Every structure is written in C-alpha cells, then in structure tokens.
Length: 223
Length: 223
Image (cartoon, rainbow over the protein chains, first blue to last red):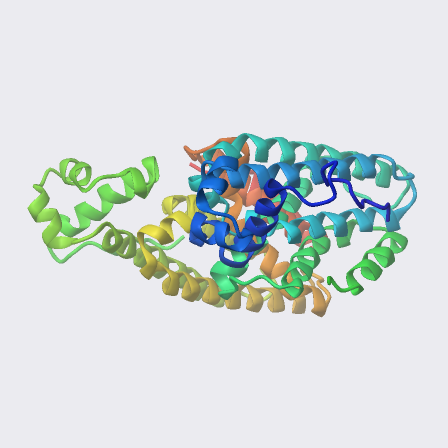
C-alpha cells in the first residue's frame, strides 16, 4: 500500500553495479537454482566482466547472503507493519499472510532446496534462524490479538504446535512440490498453492468473519 | 500385534552377510547420516573386508536403495493392514499413524535430509514417489471410512489440502528440527514430537471418540 519507490536506490539515479548484479543474480537464481548458475553467467547478464563481478562479490555464498539480507529486511519490515495492525482487523491479518507469500515468491530460490542452499552458503544458517525466530514471534503476537478480538480460537496447548506446522508447511511446500510433483520451475500458481496450504492450517480455528476474509484473500491471484 | 518373528530371516538360522551389512549400515546411517559414513566404516562394523562388502553392494547408493526397499515393503504391509481395519475402529486408525511413525523412526536417516539423500542416491526418486503415492491413497481411503463412521468431518474440498499438509509435515518435521532447532541426533522423543505435529493437523476434524483415541495413542511413549 505504501509507496516504496526509491527505497533502495542510491543517491545517484542509475542503479549501482552492485544493485544490478543483485537483480540479475536474483533472477537467475530463481530461474535455475543457485547451484546451476555460474559467475560467468551472472557477469554476462549484468554486462560486466568477471573481474568486476569478483570485485563486488567474491563468492557465490556472498551473493546468496546479500540476497538473503534483502529478504530479511523485507521480512522484518513486514513484521513491523503487522505490529501496527488494529486488533479486530481480520482483513489485515489475511493480508499479512499474503504479503509473506509475496516475499517468498520474490525470493523463491531460497525455499526450493534449503539443505542444498546451506551447502553453498553455510553462513546462511544463523540469518535463517533469526528471521524464522522473528516471524514466529510476530505470528504468535498476531494470534494473541486475533484471540483477544474473537477472530481465532486455538487452545493454549495447541498454539505452539499450530505455529510450528505453519512454519514447516510455509518453508517446505516448495521442496515438496519439487520432490513429489516434479515442479522445479515455480510459477505464481504454485505460490498461490503454497499459500492455500498454509491458510488451510488456520481455517478450522477461525471465526466466520475471519474465515470470510481469508477466503476473499485466497480468491485474489498472484501476479 | 501379529508375531513377525523370523519374517525376514533366511532359511539358515545365521543372518546372511547381506543381512548383517544392511543392519550395520542402517544403524550407522541413522547415527551419522549416509553422507558421513564410509564403506570402510561399514566393513569394519560387519567385521568383513571391503572387497566382500563391495561384492554385495558396489556403491553407497545401492545400500541406500536396499534399505529403502525394506522401508517400502514395511510401508506397503502397513497399508495392507490398514485396509483390513473395521470402519468404526478409531483406535486402529490412531494405531496406523503410530505404526507409520515407528517405521519412520526405524529408517530415520531417510527423512533427515531428503534432497541430500537424493544427491547420493538419485535412483531413490521413483521409489519415494511410489511409496508416497501408495500411502496417500491409503490415508485417503481411511479418511473416507472414518467419514462414513462419523469419526472425522472434513469438507470434500478440504480433504486433499489436509492430506498434503499431513504429507509435508510427516516428511519434513525432521528436516525442520535439524535446521530450526539444531537437532541432528534424533531420539525417540523427537519422533514422538513429529507424530504429535501430524496428529494436531487432524485434531480439529475428529469426533470426540476419535479424538480421545488419538490422545490415548499420543500418551504412549516411543521406545
């Protein structure tokens, strides 16, 4: 909703080489997976020589880590935004889930093969734990507010289990699609599928109002 | 419940070398993960020389595949057993879930890092799809019987989503524990945790009787 234009551009109008490298890398990683993309390919896409690429990013791991910190920054901004949501606004809560999946979609290479990604970028382990911890805390707070506003009803002893299942499904749905359904080239319809899988975990616990807002959110398509 | 003694022993009383190799390999794979176990280590554990090991299993992949076919045979036997369950016997359905997790526990190395395992044993992809397809079909049949016996109430349009979430959680809970909680050495308590996560997916849809049987099953400890 807010105007984020220029949020990440440098003082000069032209995007910096670093920016252009990251944009091309993200696009190539999403298309082919980080293990299949060579630095030669990235340099070619950015139209720079490999020496210049190497000057900015010495390893594939540093590229993965730089892209992850963008994801992290966006995820933390989302958490902050969610913190400002009014107690009874179930539309906003449904929107939160949707925005999370939009982030997942933009950085979808991060979710396709997490153990494989950690093999390329072992330094990713700590940041992943940070983001997941932050998101979990945030969703827990949201649950409490929804509980207080009678939008959701989860027995106290079931909440932790539910949160964990939400985390497992929202992290591994793409790995599942790859392994079980042979889907390696994720399209918007797959992200929508993942979102529906996570939403269905909540459905039995929602009030009629919150459920209607969830269904309305799910009926919008990803583009 | 049935007496399975001697199910897999050869006509001679002594277990064959092949059997002993598989038993030691399973134990080492479960302890350390297949990528960390060397053939020298396996030969040492079986007290044979490496040439003899090589005579039985030429590659680590063939060991993984042989162990997987045991898992597969046991899983199919479980499916068959479930097929014989009486319609209204919710204890038996809860038992089915528990037996599935006992199988998972025995072959836990298969679940800890599935993409990593496929890197060692690409031939595993097809058998995994076979077992998962068979299990899914079987759980779908069980759902229908439970539905007919008023033990569960899942709207027709939600059933597929629920089955998929059960599959995702029961496949990736151990990967999740490894990555998010740093648990690499799975103990019986972790398998119980995984079982509880999957059981909680069903809970909102169960009748009071079926729920009570589920809770009773969960209160038993894995040993």
